[in-house]
Picture 1 (cartoon, helix red, strand yellow):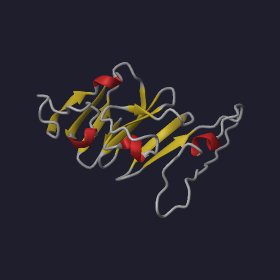
Picture 2: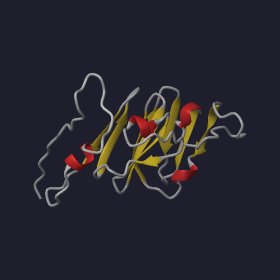
Picture 3: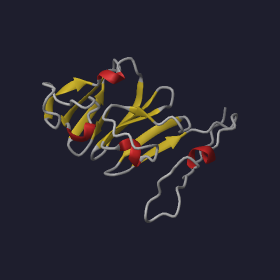
Picture 4: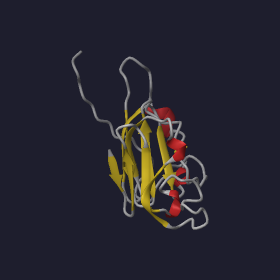
Length: 161
């Protein structure tokens, strides 16, 4: 699978290895603070795909790339984000981590998509469990000018077993 951001790309090989390349500014490649091969040009472009070391051993289910950030969902439904102040933008603190940071308060996630300055996560709520988005929404501390409060968009699908 592949995700193409504005100036960077991320791929997951058939063997499950995650690589990224392109514009390395803001940590969007997931290579921590030093994003260049030489280690001292932190904003350098990387023209050769490089393994995201912090994802070794992680089974990535889906990956997304935005303008200055990237995200993925692992096989357990956990969401990880990295890039320009992603933790602060997601209202889960102020950490400006360039390596993957887990958004632990989200319910089990299925899919993810990144836009220029936003990200959409599709979560899964099993009818056999008592999982609610209300506990997650109550932890959001940041709202945006055009919206009075955070909101959830629900999508329903019925599958016969």
